[in-house]
Image (tube, rainbow, N blue to C red):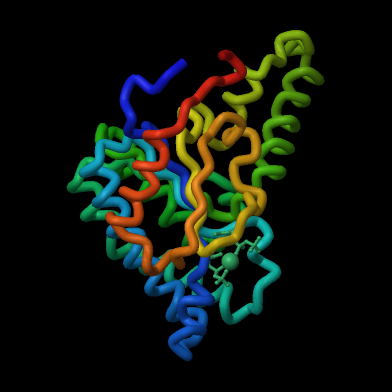
Length: 236
Ligand code: IPE
Ligand code: IPE
Ligand code: MG
């Protein structure tokens, strides 16, 4: 199966390196996260211009709670502020915003903001902008398993009916096509518990560039690399 088009339909990014970006400038880590948010705006715009259909960004992992309290607070405040300030403009651009992860584990005010953002943009038909918040790939799989187990226990589902397709539909990503292209910035060569199931056949791209420095030009380098890949899906 070769690409019909060389532009990936779904791009998923681990936005990493905010802390190191700040450290290089003798700034607090929170300044790196603020700079990272500017990069998000740029990449949304660039993704639309390139014809990408789904953009998924890893904003906060289920393991990021291990960080110092003040950094977590700074991040949560930034999410709140970012959604408040930017969602109306995203809505005007016909962007649909979706969230994946254990949303119920976030503050009530953030949960309300998330629900309102999703509801406002629900019928938009442009870019699907997916934010992974309090997301962990293992948690995603366990959560899906629990829901399937409940259905089996209640007699509503036959064990043999648990296929990869049905399992997939119970993940946080439900109906979203899996990522074609995975990008991680800042030189780290690992998944860090992002979209473990969904990345099964994604093309992987790593760059040394720190997330706050990632821009349209950097995205184009990743897209060029992607365009040279031969996706085989186990075939020849
Ligand atoms: C990514 O940047 C942002 C989040 C994980 C929220 P980091 O904060 O991980 O930056 P580094 O890896 O310390 O440079
Ligand atoms: C992954 O980055 C999480 C996000 C980008 C939100 P981390 O910086 O938390 O990952 P590790 O700790 O280096 O594996
Ligand atoms: Mg990091």
